[in-house]
Image (cartoon, rainbow, N blue to C red; front, side, top):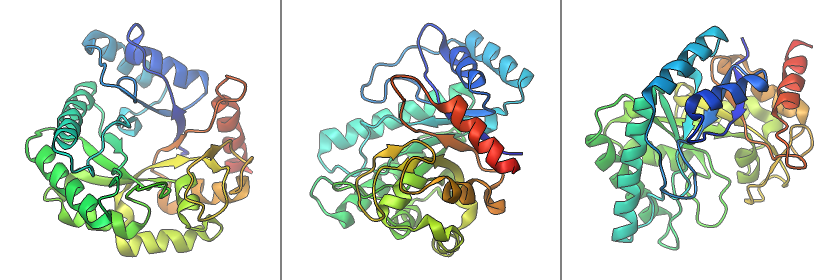
Length: 283
C-alpha cells in the first residue's frame, strides 16, 4: 500500500485533531506536522484528550500513527559552535523530543545544521557532540531523522558521506535515521533519473534500512544547483516520471512519502497531487 501524505498545520485550538482532519481532507493516509511554529520557540501545552481523539480518528481512517512524522523547527542548528546558540539548540531539541514522545510519534525529522563559516569538519563535530548530549539524556524511543540537504550556504548533509560521518560519531546509533528529500537530492547533485544507482550508493554508504521518511518534492532548480527551492509535482526539473520512480521503488514501499510542495495561489495543492500520484501508481 502506498503511504502518502503531506505537511499539515498544527494549531493550538484544534491540536492534533485538526492536523488529522486536514490530512483526511487531502485523502492522505499519513502526514507530517510541526509541534509549533518552525521559526520560533512558542509551544502550547499538549491536550492529551485531544491526542486521544486524534488517535481514534486516525484508526477509523486507516492512518497508522507509526507512519506519522514530526518535523523539528528550523531554528535548531546543532552545527553552530557559539556556546549560547549551541546550548539553545540542544535544549530545544530535547524539549521537542519530549513533545514528540508525548504525542506518541516515532520520528522527528531534523536538518543537520549549518556550520556558519566554521567549516564542515567543525560543524560535523558540533552536530555529533550535540546529538550525543541530547540522546544520552533522553529516555524516549523517538528516532531523529537527519534530512538530506541541498547544500545551500553552509548546510551540512549535502552528501551521504557527510551524514554517515555524523551517524558514525553518535553513540546511540539506533536513535538515528535518515529522511531523504527529492528536491534536496537533485539540488545537491544526485541525478534521480538514475534513482536505482542513487539508492544503491546510499545503501553502500549508510544502509537503506536507515531511510524512514521521504519528502517528495519537485525542484525549481537544475541538478547540482545547491539552491533548495521546491516545486509542485511534475512542474519542476525533476518531473513526474522520475518522482514516480522514487515513490514506486519496491525497496521503499513501506516508507512514508510526504509532500512539501508550494501552495498555489494561497491554496494547498496536496489533494490534487496525492490523487495524481495514486493514479500514476496504479497505471
